Image (cartoon, rainbow, N blue to C red; front, side, top):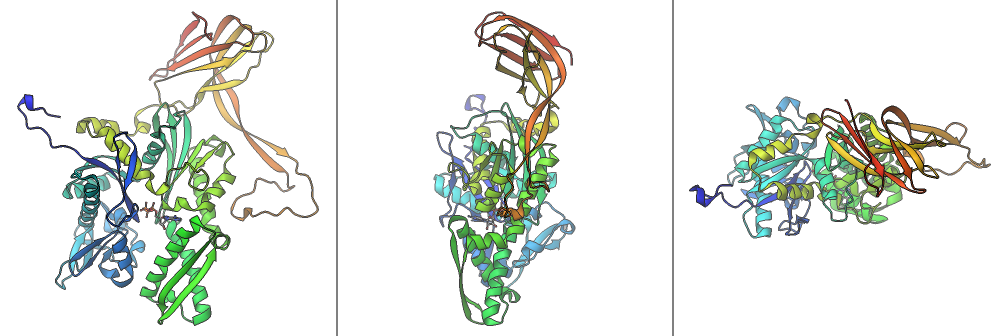
Length: 566
Ligand code: ATP
């Protein structure tokens, strides 16, 4: 930053926030003095602000107010536009906009035709322009809340965002008076939101971030190693998300309505729009309670509709969609060349992650040692709808003092620029009478190098002279069978949407993570270790993969040190 003494003009004060900008909803967050991220509610009190703008006689409505206009004023209401930014008309899927202003080709970009001025004329509003208006409204809500003008932000983007999309987003934000300090990926933001909590234990771990939104589900498998996050795999699905769950309820209630009234509310645009809004509200209520109602005044042909549904029925009706969510997560793990047993945490992010059944299915899929971070499985979980914005706000507070070039340097994805260890490196301590020791990983696979780790390892039984073997560890999955007690009747099972772990004989399959010892990289002798004592081993891997090892009796002096080639 320039200083007065240099004779330069000082830069204006930067007030930066975190923005999560989704197709369905957006959120804004800031960090308080103690570095804690807080989500900001807009003037209507919403923390999840629908990414929707609507125009009535020249007046602009935003967020929830605009979303409710999808019933009466759908043609002048622009929704689901985020994914069109920076895209070519021929490459987009216009389906999400079928009940709002339609996207159209306009010169080399995408636009909407709406009556956004007081006159009756239809105006062309490009997707960039509508994004600018949306970001302006978000920034204005944040400015009102903070009592000072917001002029910068860190914005989250999906992992498959293109350079053109980044550029378009940056330009659109700039036009709204918001300088984009950095764009961070949505899964990184979610991991950051959790890891920035004071109670977080920062250890090496494999995390699956499942971002389940309204129109898309994005998966990312992340290796967190010594505070460095590396994305190991990503996948995206546009057919399994919140709207598919809404559709289940829309169809259910429509059938009920048809039965009584012989008319299908889905055939009339306005009736369908009304039912859609109510079905979504019913779905959200079912995430909290066992029962929820759905009431729509004058749903079709002037007939009111009112009904209730319980969670069990909903879960049965939506079983296929829930099963698809589970499969997406399984596939993401497979794509990262990992096993379900390798996953330490699953972070459920995005609005749809509030759904209890999705987390329960994951609890059954993963071993009990995997933490499923969602509201229904962990009371201390962070609200999944706010994770992206919180992560972005934390990042904003970290980078807002940096020079632009330094920030750009730090945005390069670690995955592509740093080499990683292909196998784990660990330790096996053996003695003369115990030749085969237990292998313990000290540096996990996928750790970015250079890296250094120290650990304490128990020595076999009586102590004495021991040999510390530094080996590569290859993770393997051991499958064994546990015979199930035979019963006359079949055990009741509601595993309909999950693959069962049982084979044809009904025996339970037990899968466990075991280490196969790979190449021995080094051996070090430590003499006269006390009975019950431990050895302290430090392994350092250089950027060129050269390994340095140090071993000594814990608490003792001296020790053995050695280097190995690459
Ligand atoms: P996308 O970009 O995929 O459209 P988004 O990131 O903009 O999504 P989110 O707020 O993450 O939006 O997700 C929106 C979805 O979450 C909607 O389908 C909404 O109905 C759903 N949702 C929000 N709250 C709940 C809840 N409590 N229970 C179930 N679903 C919910």
